[in-house]
Length: 123
Image (cartoon, rainbow, N blue to C red):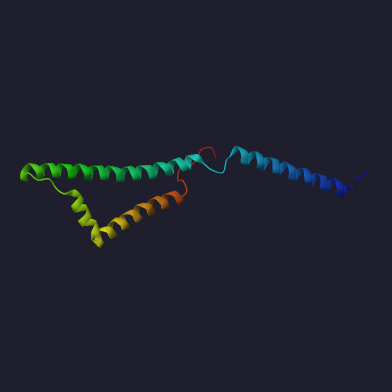
């Protein structure tokens, strides 16, 4: 019949199988990707991009208002495409735009790489 060592090996095999099933069940119930954390990060990114959109819309509104006032005073409209071409042909303005873009991208990347700070009550 089986010896004491055989029973010990069988007990170890059953313990290993039990631990494997427990870990399998836990990994199935608790997915690797926590969608709550991702949603918060996506919301931060979307709010940052929306702020940039609001700023662009406000600048466009100010430009329209300025053009309207300039047209009523002088009778001529402002050549926005010429001003934009002249402004972006200068290196410092391009450098400022690149730096602002890099700062925004850096903020998004840093926020996406940070762990979520909210305490999860289910854990």
